[in-house]
Image (cartoon, rainbow, N blue to C red; front, top):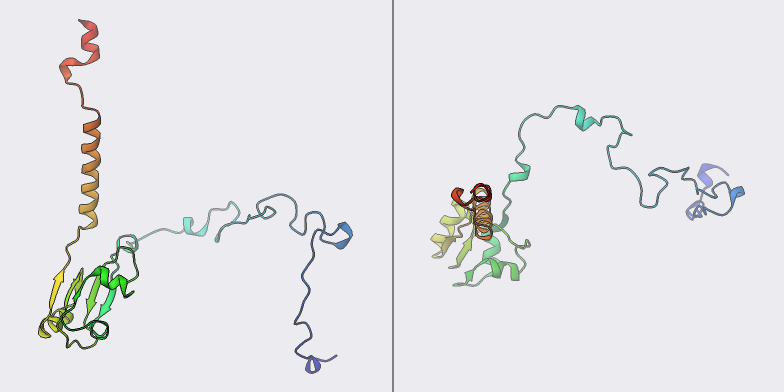
Length: 187
């Protein structure tokens, strides 16, 4: 048989390898996995970039610079064209309505309105951020752009820390220095 004579059917249905069918089959007992180790275990294997105990490349290379990845603020985007298409004149648009219509998908979304498209309807919209073009377009159409105030991550962390401190002080008030147990024992 030559390469030009191979039809579509040849080799298209390869039989699976049947392991654990006796020593003489060539893949019996350990089923081609070898003896012991993480690769032989069910659900085993190493993570990507594992180098077998050698110091991995991502630990050998120096880390320089700053990445904002962990601290970034991501907004869900709504364009003026979407507002024009989905809402009627005089509607009040808030986060609950946007989630109900599935225009935003996050559980606790941060919504930003951008100026792509045209808006001719008088709409009152509440969002966390507006671009300058979007704000002027909404106001020119006779609507209002309400800014939803939100705490910065620093303020949220500070409030959380302060509530934890106040809860700890309410549970166990500190004894005054005059009434310490050691002072009572000496007297």
